[in-house]
Structures are given as structure tokens and as C-alpha cells.
Image (cartoon, rainbow, N blue to C red; front, side):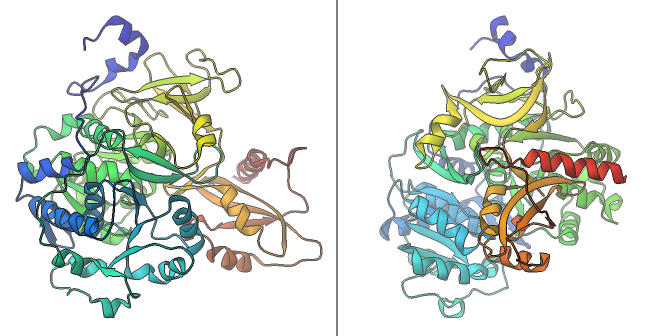
Length: 562
């Protein structure tokens, strides 16, 4: 396609692309798992993963996934079945992810920190046919399987794939009758012929749960085509730093959680398409992160969230790491990066930029050029093949440049739908445009500046937290009459969760008791860090919570105390 003046008029941001970044692509139409197949063919003996010193080559990973996929099919997994992957970053996550895609089944990402209640909601909504999980979360999984029928449960111990650590047994893990041990399943399968499941580009590949546009968790359905397109875009966007590096210098630092699309796209998929090695850490521990950095002379890419970058730059040994040499490119997303942190990264002379994406856009959409012009306060420009409109949410008409409106985005990674939720799908998708709920303005060069959110989602430490979910948990407590949860600014986490509580008449409860209560139903990162008791909470005449008012009051109070 020829780049015409008409296209430039509609997409002025193309002029800001780095010189090696194309403005459009002809995306492959093959199944997503062929990305791994291609890497295993191109660099079969290159390490695909590095996990506490243990390496697995691309050929070993690919053949292991084939054998497991055939075993899954033998056990009854069919195209379109939903398979939960509840694992931390690990070689096992890679194996579960790719083998599921090979069968034509759909990967349902599950946060290992989910509680029984959270797991039950997703398992019921998707009708899980199978579940990959690990020893550390078996109490929650066992409770889940007592109330939800999941025919196929496959368990591993994360250290099973570390040389010298030994391999667990089903007896050691205390597996329920009928459950399977991952390593045993792989050993039992000798079928090395890749499955010939007919997979089309529009077939669902992944379900990522998100708050969507109204704060109620729902499953964004991402297709095979979305996966392939995202892989091409994220890799080519960084082409100016990657293309000239030989394969033995291509290492990706994988600290983002794989159970979210940000980690999948920017760690797993980026690594596979660029034939890089994933340096995997299953959890965030700043000292361990710094120690792992010291073991590797160079990372071609470190995608992270602002709190991760902040923690490393604040570490006592940060200046000894020579981060400008050790990291070819560092990118942040999932939460706005404070200007002070950006300045600190520049002090370290890091090649750095930030971007914007959502679960519904498969983590991509808008990003600052890797080496091109960046603007303070901007999340960047639309990436190749995306169109962005800034729309008045009341009139649904585009606003003039420089004026605020809601970001509407269209592109090759936009979700197909919300799983089993046609009403929310109809609201969120309008003629192929995704209504994001984020308020922003665009300048004359196409740079986008996010200024607010129309939805109530809280972003703390890179995690998406939906206040309505927390409200509903706290309303279960007998002492609570009303509650409104909000996100308030936090220099380190971006935002922190605060719950405003109205007690039932005559009731008494402490903050410690409410915290303990929340921990029974919510993952740790969702539990409010702050509580405030009030006689009455602000609501409209129709009962809508005035979250923004509480947030503004909190900001004003903090500014007054400075």
C-alpha cells in the first residue's frame, strides 16, 4: 500500500515513527503457535528460556509442547475449550500456553493470587474444561473443584524445571484422584507429530479478564489474528534497537506477570518472534531482580511497570549496574509514569519510553517512539495500523485537536468481544472502534496525553483494580452499611486503594478486622491499604457512588498538608 497524503492527513503520527518502523504490515494468517514453530526452526539450539540458570532450547520447548498438546487432545481437550493457566512466570507457563494454543483451545489467564471466590467467578463464566496450576495454590484450587466441575487438572511444582532441584511426585503434591502431574504427562506422551487442528485467524485464542468499561470484571476475547498481529507490531516497533544485534545478545528480562497480556505480548511473544531468550523470574523481589541483572551482561528489552523501574533505580547498587549498557531498551506501561521517574531514568542514560494499552487491545495501541521524539506527559502516538479518535462521550463526535475527549481506538489487536456478554460488547465496540474510557487530548503531531479516566478503575503497582468488586466484598461485612472505594495518588504505586466506610447503626469494627475480612475474598493487591469511616457517603439521587468527589477531596486534603 502506498503512503498517500490522504493517509498522512488521517494519521499524522506516522511522520514520527522511527526510521525502521513500517507504517503498515501484511500480517501472517497462520495459527499463533506457528510463532514458536518458526523460532524452533530458525534457532533450534538457542535457549528459549533461562530459569535460575536452567536453559531450555527452542527445539526442546517446541517438541515438549507438541507432545503435551497431543496428550491434551488424548485426554479430551477440543478446539474452543477453555483451559485455565494459573501459573507464575516459569518454563511451565510457556509449555502450558503454547500446548493449549496447539490444540485450538482457548487460554484463560488466571492470576495465581486469585482467591477461591475470584476463581469461582471466572471458572463458572468460562466453563473451564481444564486447568494448569502449581503446588503453592492447591488449597484454593481444591476448594474450587469442590464446587465447580473442572474435568482436567494438571499440577506442577515450579522447581520441577530447575536442574538439580529434583522433580516432584504426585504423592508429594497431594494430588486429588484423577488429577495429573505435568512432568508425568509429558513423559507419557511420545507423539511428536504436530496436531493438525484447523485453526482460523478469527478463532479465539485467549481470554483476559478485565474491568472493561463499567468496572465489572469480564473476559476480553482475543483471537489468533490478534496474537500474531501483536507479536509483529511489538517486535517491529523496537526494530531500531533489535535488528543489528546477533542472536546471542538477545535476552529479554521477564519480570512482568505472564498471566496478563502485557507480559505475554512483551515478554513471551516478543522473545519468540525475535528469537530471544526469556530470563524468567516468577515473582518480584528487588534484590533478586538486581542480582539477576548482574548475571547477564545485556538485555535487549526490559518491559516493566513504573514501580518496577522505580525499585531498581532506587536500589543501592543501581549505579553499579551500568543500566545504559545492560539494557538496550526499557519500556513501561500499565500505569502512568511520573515525570520524576522519567527524569531519573534519563539520568541513568537509559533508552526509555512509555506506552498505553488495555486488555481489550492486547496490551498495545499507543507508544512513544523508541528513539524518536518523546513529549513529557504523553503516552505516545498510535502504533502501526491503529487509528485513534478523541470523541466527545456525550455527542459521540470527534473533538478538535487539543480538546479533551474519550479515546476510541481501532486496529489489528482489538478484542473480538467480551466473553458471553453481548450487552457490554455492544457498548464497548462501535463499528470496530473500542471505547476505552480514558480521557485524553491529541496534539497536531498525533501525540496523545491522557488526563483522566471515565471509568473508575484503579491502577496500583501496574495491577488493574476495580473498586466495585471491593465494595461488594466489604458490603458482606455485617458492620458495613455502605462503602465507596477509590484510588488515591501514591508516589510509588501510582495509586493506592482507599475504602470509605459508613457503618451500620450501633456497629463497631476496626481497620484490622476489615483488612482480614477482605483477604478472605480478594487478592492481596486489591485489599484496601487505607480506610476512613464517615457518617454518610456521597451518592447521586439515583444512588451512583461519587467516587471522583471523594478522590478530589483526598487530593485537596493532601495538597493542603504539604
